[in-house]
Length: 146
Image (cartoon, rainbow, N blue to C red; front, top):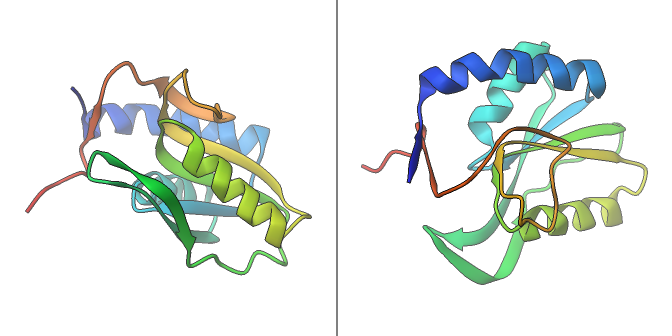
């Protein structure tokens, strides 16, 4: 297991944000709740973008992958064009593929790109923007148990 500390994230988020803004400059940052919320907040702050929305998807229960992908609480994106989907990790890629499918079905005019902190090279979808490759299970600093 790899612990991804806040100090490491803090060093990496500024150049990551700059790269996304220069190469895509999204109208909306759409964080996938809950994993993408922290990254989404930092990106929105760094870009000065107040259009930080979220949607919910459930494909895992703790570390157990479920048989179905539930996607709900989809915001109204009808007046926007460039959407950055934000998550903590692209693991299998199945969830993000389904999210993109659902969004394009509902809003075919959108230009969608994906940003994540980590991705696995074996994933069915590689994000356009990522900080690093995951070589083992990631324990994020924001994943606390009470």
